[in-house]
Length: 349
Image (cartoon, rainbow, N blue to C red; front, side, top):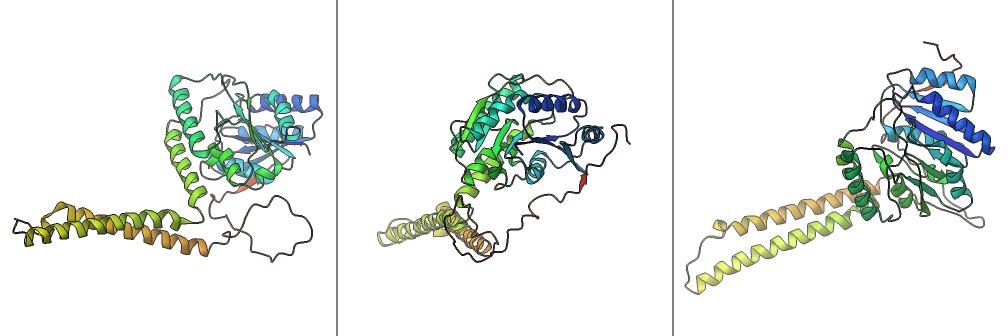
């Protein structure tokens, strides 16, 4: 299969028929073998009924429905797990992403050798209250991730080689940082394509300003995991040792100053009367706690099932390996109940 189109959605019943027809037209014009996976993220409108009707008309249009709303990242991860195409295209369901971009994105993956291509909505139809924070957010993401050629990390229109989506796990709100997740998994050929941003035709946006705060917190989480995820002692141990050493030196200096004043006949005060003594003790206690945090982190990592799992690109020859129990990430994501598409008419209750 050439292409899998993954469309996460929440309350987009009005736009789905038009989006499906648009995707079908583009695929047929280019002769692609394809599937479209609509991931219904617990919509409260008629989105699921519409998806079932679309599937009845064209079995290439498939659907998965969550029983409640979990978020865009779990929806994408579910779509990635089920996608069968050699190239996976993701897009939003609100018609702001144009399916006409699919052929060019497909060529960039298959002919130009990119692992991932992210869309860049250079001209946006959003208010300044959204565009200015987005620019600041993307500038920070470029700096932290080291992916300097991307202008829009959060663009929903992206293309991936199949190997990429099968080797990354999108959880929490990490859909904003799929390029960073791909880079951390060893897929470094990341490109960008300028795409059109269309005004929203139906409904209202489902995202609030809290996504910017959450986005920065998630970015820090990814940075820490990439740098110290398998070696927490290198971070906590170093920081704790430095704090303890500084506090210890400060205690010695406070005590030495008192002894000097005593033997010199100068006036002096008790060590416990000095605020620097308590600051030094606080530094030593915090340093000890940080060191112990790193030590406990190392113990957790040592007993982790995936501590020695590495992304392998290719192998040559017959290399024997001992079987290792697969990693179980079931506890990392919400437990979802998935309702398969059944044959039904669009008017079925």
